[in-house]
Image 1 (cartoon, rainbow over the protein chains, first blue to last red):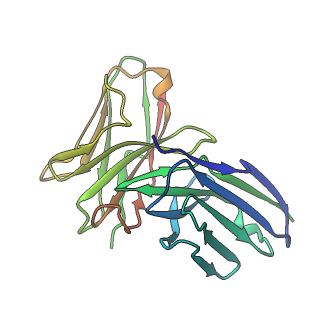
Image 2: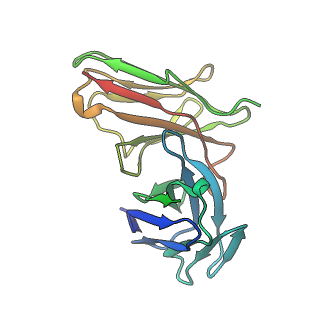
Length: 109
Length: 115
């Protein structure tokens, strides 16, 4: 079955620094979605990428979808304490979303 | 506009008891998904339902677990004869249409603790 892998599992970032989290699928995806889950909270949709090579930005967050539609990345610039949480990518194949294990981000002030 | 409503928020059961988790999707949504999350792990797909139909239950254990989404009322995830390994957060999500190009809206989850 489809597997979605995310690295790194943990990301400890100094406030103000940049970081990137990566997502790889074992199969070609229809689209990829990113969610954020704050500690003790539930996943909240961030963005969806559909087209090969697509790049989307949300303020300090940049999302990319690979040319082969099997990988994706999330880059955050100038990390803030509000960025704390776990970021999940989820690959869509037909109707089923398969989530990666997530990258848990902590921020040092 | 109420979001996806899950209850109870926390559920404590002793081994061998039954757990019933409820999920009311967002208004206008007829597609419901159940996911399970263990500490520091991702969300594992369990089951996908439309009104009165189970579309895909490939992620759900064959024994003790069942799910339904009746014509009227919330979707129910039922776990019979719970064991300690069932302790986890169970999230329900809904969408207006099939997840193809549709984002999922998640409920706040039910934290199940089995003593």
